[in-house]
Length: 99
Image (cartoon, rainbow, N blue to C red; front, side, top):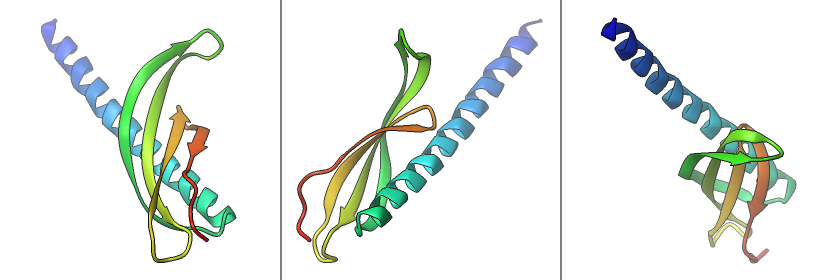
């Protein structure tokens, strides 16, 4: 009977890594679309954190925060923050940048 618990734990860990990979792909596409709309050059993206959160309005959801780098003039680089709730884009914060 204890073997079933080990299998469930292994399956949950596997699901979590697959889910994080899928969230990372969505974050990359959101950042790339944002940079394309603003005539910015998208450079890179990295996950800062992912955690389970709760709100009365949405219930339980995974909150993921990503840092992405972009360039406005092709010479300098700036770092923005992208926040996802599940797969959906919640907010993008970028500093003032040179065009």
